[in-house]
Figure (cartoon, rainbow, N blue to C red):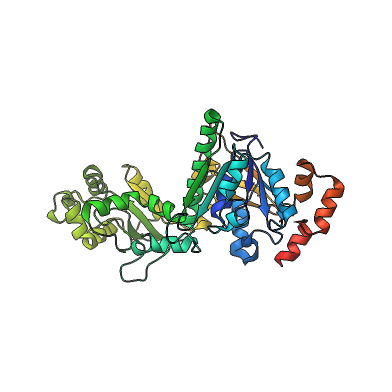
Length: 402
C-alpha cells in the first residue's frame, strides 16, 4: 500500500511489542516490512490471548518468513534480504545479535546504507545492559510506579505497556530521522533506545518539578501535587469525570459556571497552594454543585467555558464515539482466515491521510516461499531449505508454536 515510505524495505526481527510496534509504524507509512521469525515464531505467539493481542496489534500489513538464524544457510537467507533492505529492527537481549553475527557493527560495515535500529531494556552501555528488560521492570525502576496509585495502596503499573510503546515510538522517530539524514550523507546510522530512556523521557515535566522542589514524586492517587483542581475526579450520578481548572481565569470561570462565585475570593481557594491544602473541601464543593448531573451533562456544561474535562469511560463506551469515528484512527483489519476487527492505527495524518484498512498479522512463515523467490532462490533451492529445516512454512511453524 502506498504512503510516505513507499519503496522502503524493512526487516523486522522484533519480538513482543517494542520492536514490532516500531516496525508497525513504518508499515502504516507504506514501507514493505518483512517480519523475520524463528521457526517457532515471535515469542508472543506462545503466550495465549495476551500474546495474540500483541501479534494482532503490532504486525498488520507485514509479511512473515520463518528462518533458523543459527544455521549458516539461515544466515545466508538473512543476508540476501539485507542486500535490499533499508532498515533492520531488533529488540533482542543485549549481546544476542552480536553472538549471531548480526550486531550493528557487523552489519553496518557490510551494508553502509542500512539503518540499524535496536531497543533494549536498560540501555546497551551501563552495568544493567545484560539484564532482561520488560515493560514492568522499566516502570518500576525509573519512577513511574513510585508515583502511580493511591498513597495508601501498593505502587501501580499503568494499565498498558507504556514503556514498550513509548520506546517503540522513540525508535520509529529515530529511524525516520536516520532515513532523512541518509538522503544527504548516503550512509545509514545506528539508532538505539531503551525502555529506561523512554520512561525517563516521558516524565520530563515530573523530572523538572523534582529539580525545582527537591521532592521526589510520591503516590497520591488522582490530582496534581501542586495544583488544584488538576486531574481531579468528581463522582456523578452515572460515573465520574476528571477536570482541571487551576489557572486563575479557569478557576474563576469554573466557580461562576457552577453558581459559586463566592469561592473565587474564599481564602481557602484563593490560589493553587491554598486549593491544594484544602483539596478535599474543594472537590466536595464542586461535587455538590454538579450533583444530579450525568457525565455528559457535566462535560457539556464545563466545556462551554473551555474548562478541560473528560468523562471517565471504559473501552466498550469508546468504540462508537463520534470523535473517534470522525478521526478515522481505527483501522479495519481483515485476517487471512476471514476474521474482521478494528485496531488503532497511526496517531497522526500526513496531508490529512492515513491508512484506514489493513491486512491482519501473518501466520509465522506465511510468506516464506514468496520472499525467497523475490531474493533469487529457485524452486529447488527453496525445497532444500524446507527439507533441512532452515526455513519453515506456515503449517510447520504452527506445529512449532503448539
